Length: 84
Image 1 (cartoon, rainbow, N blue to C red):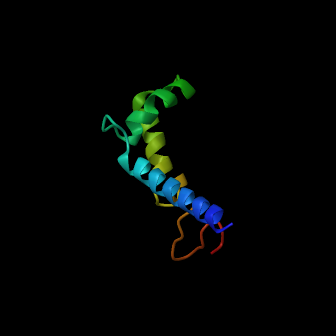
Image 2 (image 1 turned 60 degrees about the vertical axis):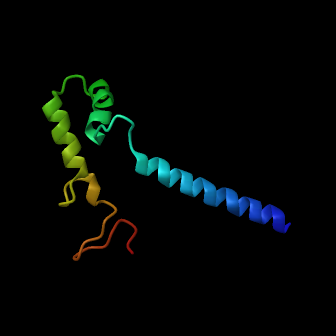
């Protein structure tokens, strides 16, 4: 039973390390997040220009309270989404 537990723990540790290395590596071409997202955004919003898509992406990532980036972050005058 100990061998099974140690094997599972080693597998979980290995998967966690592998995932973090993969996430840290980013893209092979050195593209930014916006450059990666642009073809999909054009497909979802064919009537928008590249500038409008960039503005939409920037709005979603900024942390001043209007974008999605602030949803999980806590600030001084309010708690975050999970009330912690």
